[in-house]
Amino acid sequence: MKLSKNFTNPLAANNPVIVQILGICSSLAVTVKLEPALVMGLSVTFVTAFSNLVMSLLRNGVPSRIRIIVQLVVIATLVIVVDQFLRAYMYDVSKQLSVYVGLIITNCIVMGRVEAFALGNKPWDSFVDGLANGFGYAFILVLIAFFRELFGSGELFGFEILGDWYTPNSLMLFPPMALIIIGCIIWVHRSINKDLQEK
Amino acid sequence: MAINKNSNAYIIIYTVVMVVIVGSMLAFVATWLKPTQDANVLNEQKVSIMKAFGEADANFDEVVTMGRVTDGELTVVDKADKAAVKSVFDLLRNRKNLSEATTDLPIFVYVKDGVTKYVLPIVGKGLWGDIWGYVSLQQTEDNVVITGIVMDHAGETPGLGAEIATEPIQKLFEGKALYNADNEFAVRMQKGGAQNEHQVDAITGGTKTCDGVNAMLATSIGKYESFLRGAEVEAEADTEECACCEECCAEECCEATAEECYAECEANVEPVNVEEE
Image (spheres, one colour):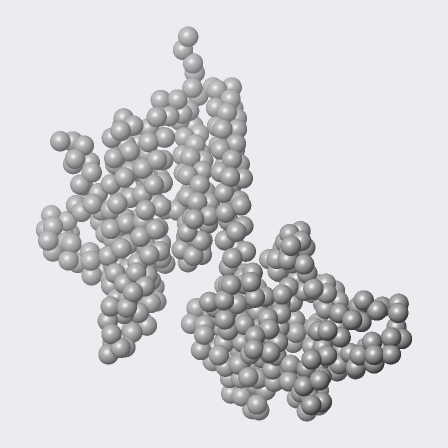
């Protein structure tokens, strides 16, 4: 019961991007097309899940005075591993993502979950929490990228969807449009979840 | 025995152990994946070169001859010699060394339907960082013409300078002759629009990047000038040599190089005969 709530909560009601407003920077940068957005989402998911797992396993041994440093080392290691794998096996995508893979280290979602959840919970719960938060992030990224690629280039995953009659709207390809789309998603989300509305 | 987890000794040991474990893990991953990553970069270079030739679908390894140019002389790199091939691509990857190199300049030759095209690497500085690419050139009777160009950049302004990496801008360069009537290098991106047949329109708002492109083209291609312009003369010299050789063979006068002579005659005699008939 608790586990499933752990998993579903970050997907919608407590989504890291649209409720906690974390990880906005990369959501603007890598959502021009679906493919990099999806890869970025999965990379962050991998990092949040495993950094949560590792930190939860280490939580009783970490000296509290250096725990932030230990967290950073664990997260940075995972990010470098992801980066190296992308460079080896998904070279084109890794070029499109450029510095943003490395910047996962600074993504507040990752460190936020480690500090707020993994240090106080058992490994399996922490792993699920990391996975769910990563998916919550990935879901929003893919949603934004869907609109941006569809209306910005008339394509989805590089395949032409809208025909020649559609003139691509290049405004969709610029970061400000991603921010506007996030705004719209938050608007829709809050009008459904009325308890999130600020009085 | 209770361990004091906040004691300095514990913290130092913890840190050292952690760093050793993480360090060896990362070293292992990096070493393990390096060959695949290098292959990706190499493949990208080959694809860019083929794009510059305008033959994006052709297989680089099958159709392109690699060479190096020193003082206007082309030396062909034997493709079977892996170390030599690697040294060419390593040089392409190291943009600083490439921009400083004056001898052993890499060049790629592609002959199709009797037309010889050369691709040269170009490197320069844009507004924010490096710009680089490949330019494909073809010799005409009295000039050298750009047949294709690909350019990329490290961090030019999106929508302005970064446009140099897009096809519409690169298409503008096709068919431009390098040298004007005064034998000066004349291809450039001209602010305010092209003024003559050597110039192309610059990018509005990307003037500094365009200046970088101009400098890149002038210096990078300039290093090959003696080769590019000398090759015509050399081609004529070749035919003369052949004619001479042919006589030689007929008269059996050049015993010293008889073998080369026969080989060359066999390779060249036929077209000459056809013309005579």
